[in-house]
Length: 232
Image (cartoon, rainbow, N blue to C red):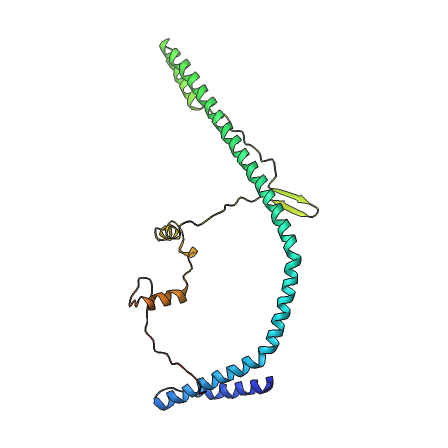
């Protein structure tokens, strides 16, 4: 059977099915026979396309393997370079943050030192009865502010070259060690439900295996389906 003959048979079946109404035992039997006929037509179509698909698959498989052989050393070397770059950038960022903390702490200490100095002067002025001067010194102490020094990264966020651009992006790495703990975080609202993907087929099997009639968050409906097997 050629492709045109198969298409013609599909059109014939389509016309027959359009008129089918299942409303009693005879029409149920007739519809069941048509399903079996469709299964037979399906087998014919699969048989017709089996060989060309297999040939195309083998050709695709061979070409994909050759492409993979050429890509692997390039991808491996790229991975090595990006890991070295990431290690350098991560270490530089650690140093920058550490230096920033040191400078911020130094600034806070200097601010506090100046406040203490002004507070002592205010106390001495008050002892001498110079109330206005004491108040002015206390107000000055409250306004003490030393501008922060911002540590600039050694590497610019974006480096432009003739070949393209190289940019730095902060990211994180994760490793799941307790799936139940992650699920509890979802239930508690700490994480969005969208991070969880429920496998419908596995859920359906579990419901059937445990013979569950009801389950929170799931609508369970009993349905009766037909099973069809052609004569051997």
